[in-house]
Amino acid sequence: MLQHSQASSDRSARDEETRRNGARSLAESTSLNYVTDADPGIRRLRKGAGFSYLEAGGGIVDEATLARIKAIVIPPAWTDVWISPDPDGHIQATGRDQRGRKQYRYHPQWTEERDGVKYSSLVAFAESLPALRRQIDADLRRRGLPLERVVASVIWLLDNTMIRIGNAAYARDNKSFGLTTLRDRHVEINGSSLRFAFKGKSGKEWKLKLVDRRIAKIVRG
Image 1 (cartoon, rainbow, N blue to C red):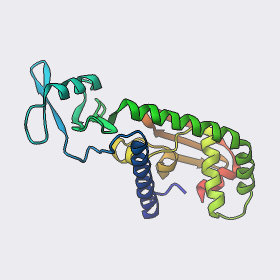
Image 2 (image 1 turned 45 degrees about the vertical axis):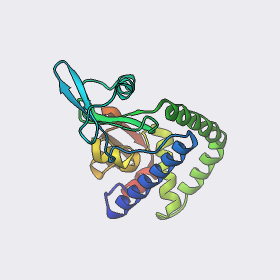
Image 3 (image 1 turned 90 degrees about the vertical axis):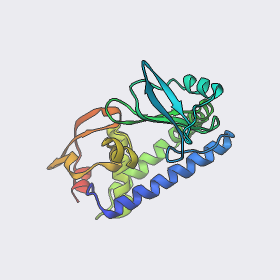
């Protein structure tokens, strides 16, 4: 179940595309522009005790842009800093922290809208949770490894372990994992016992054990 394969890579690519499409839609709803750090951007260069900032074409940024950059409050320790040349870009800056993890600074309107969407989704999810748990239990009783049973096991693990769902980009860029990006090496199965050990988001080290015969059988399969 946790074996890394071409199928899982394809699924991760589709998930990433879905995430990008969702970001584009949310940016449009806030009258912002969808941008990525693959686009030409402003570079931050060390200059004495501070920094200088150069446009993609090599020119020095103007005073208004410099004021915007200072308002973003990019940590001095970040490396590989990219800054959006668009003041209405949904991402305003990216960089690598001291551990090499990719970090983001978003436009305030984007953050506000995204948090509102998350809250609305959470309320709807809470209302549907009892029915969802009943369906999970029913699907876990299925025989063999049909898709419904595999999906039910993933949702059961999310519900009972609080492990994050995972993100292909974080697994690739930061070597941090979640439930859908775990590898075989991250779990040890002994009978009905499962032991998870992996690095999660923000460098958190996960070490946990759970006992469930049905889940162990599905993961082993």
